[in-house]
Image (cartoon, rainbow, N blue to C red; front, side):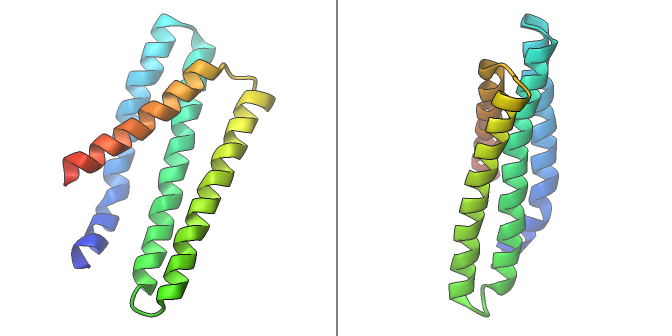
Length: 126
């Protein structure tokens, strides 16, 4: 369990670096081959994934602190995290598509690229 706690301490730093690299790559590609609004849309999609990563990290830290005290409470934290991530993702997509009128392809591409980057980072660290 000590390794898990240490991983949680260093995880945000690695995640931020990975997110910045993906922002530069994906936003640069959409800015180069499409237009400025497409680049902003891709950055917004990456930001949604980054917010999800933050929520996951925050709840995991809480769950690790409470792991020895109450297993039921830890399970509730995990389910609450999943619910919050789902609601936040749907809300951010609704705002991006509806209110901000961002193009769908770059927004979804940015979101998917950030998730793929996070997945690749997890495989690389193991």
